[in-house]
Image 1 (cartoon, helix red, strand yellow):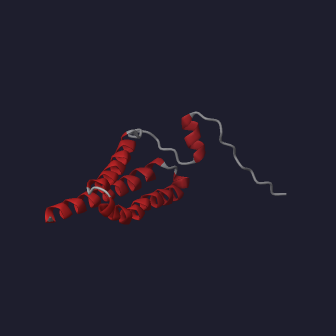
Image 2 (cartoon, rainbow, N blue to C red):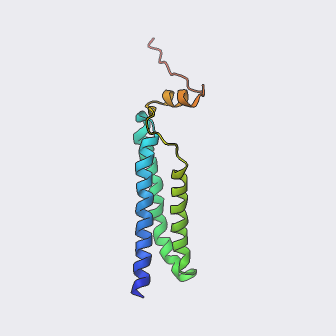
Image 3 (tube, rainbow, N blue to C red):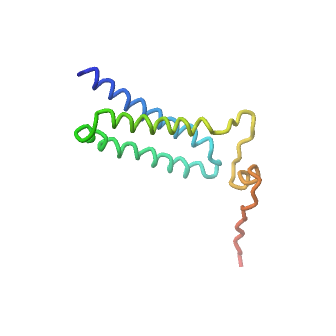
Length: 119
């Protein structure tokens, strides 16, 4: 009985911590410098979804099989890990710092500069 609780606790803690680490480490590197704060706050907000789901997953023990909450957290962790696996390698490359740099590197011409009229 103790082993089951310990295993459940470790799986939930490890999956939650690894997902949070993936969000913070990779999101900050993918965002242009000028938008990094906003992107990190959005990723932090999405990481909090797991903390909202957590109490409801513990209630599922009474309704469904005990493996269901573990499978939910394991699938979410695997999806995040898979998404990170497909991120491009930026070793030795210049990372774009502005949205204009991002569109220049991507080859798109959708960026329009906003010029304020002073008169």
